Image (cartoon, rainbow, N blue to C red; front, side, top):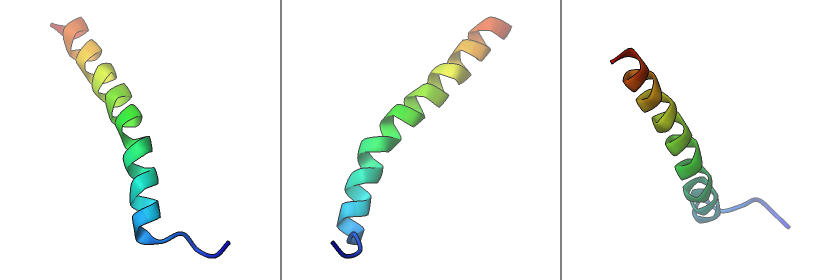
Length: 36
């Protein structure tokens, strides 16, 4: 198959990142709400 191009890697990263960022963001918000 060969190595994935930078464009391929960017597409995969763009698909995977939102879920991780949302999960981290939700966790941060819940901790902040809990402390508040």
